[in-house]
Image 1 (cartoon, rainbow, N blue to C red):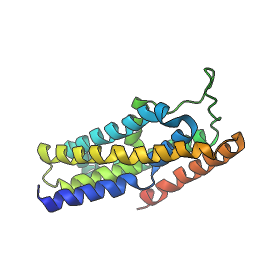
Image 2: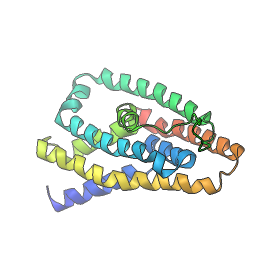
Image 3: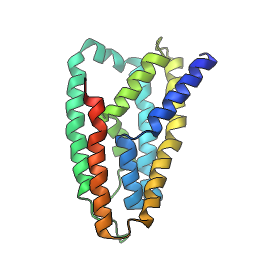
Image 4: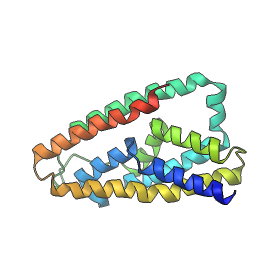
Length: 198
């Protein structure tokens, strides 16, 4: 892979990983509600789950969408329904009290990793990365693309989680936190609109 291609891939990974999307908005909300330590499994699930997704897309899943275009439409519908459900869960989340009986919990590692498969922005990023930066779809090229995304993605999502935790200084009352969670829920739904358009 040439220097120019690696640079282009790195910039694409950075821009697509740092810009708002379902993962980043959910991590920001989780950081604000639960802090970085409790959100760490969610962060690792996003980073490693997405890296694995890029790898699988590159070694064969992309052909499914090319052979069966309806499967991509079905994925969009499932994604919209699930993201709407997650937005509702964020909107009605009770403030974390820090007590043992607190019922609010961040996403687990497995939940966050599996979420990548219904995240339309993640699919768009993975399909674009494989198509543009690994057109031969050789295992080495696909693994390199996935590795670059993994290395770039984790610090980017860490920034969003940290921003959420810093917001805890402002979200000092249940009312403010409810307003914040409602806003995050609306932004989560809005973030998928461009991806779902033809």
